[in-house]
Length: 295
Image (cartoon, rainbow, N blue to C red; front, side, top):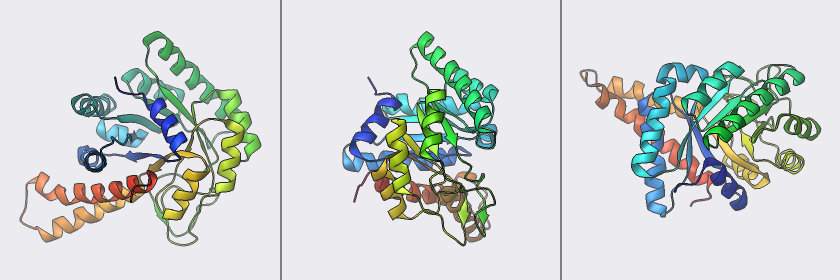
């Protein structure tokens, strides 16, 4: 019987590695991510768990139930640890729909709400997920976020106003205790999107402090644009899952543009799209190696 995502995260904590979380907007993205994970696992002899993310916008493009069916089909066909996350959902109602549809894990993003309102809705999501777990035997995880790190896959000239304010250990401890969340995403220096100037860096000392006071697995958002050293320091300090999105979106678009220019007469979509799939594979393989300390 396959281990649950919760069990894989616990293993990552013990090993001091991080599970890779990669978002998709279409089937090509899923193929690129899954091919990279499966090929890397085959060469190393151990299946590396991977999480596929669907934000509210991406969910609209792929389909909520369709996303569940696609990920479940790969997991069951290949007996491979691939899981689906409802990434950055902004209301209890959308989180509930994802839980009911069969997502493995969900994120309520209340980072632009007041501290009190963020706690209130996060706890509502936790209570519902845990109720469903008890009734069905599923093991849905709920992630909460505290601290605004910007939003969207935007290539910015500088860090956006209001973003990058770090989560304090005191607020982190209170938030986790009052919500009962399973996973916690604090603001520790990273920023969503890519920054041309003033590169963000993670704060490993803060990560370690938050890990100590919360006692639950920590998740790093806004991974695109960070250095390899940032990732290594973050996982050593206590990060157990890392989100990558903008980086693979940029690789996809650039490869697709080149494919269209290089093949002006080609009209077969899967031939035009193949270089974009391969570009995603390359990024994901490199990130999975880094997160899992594979040379």
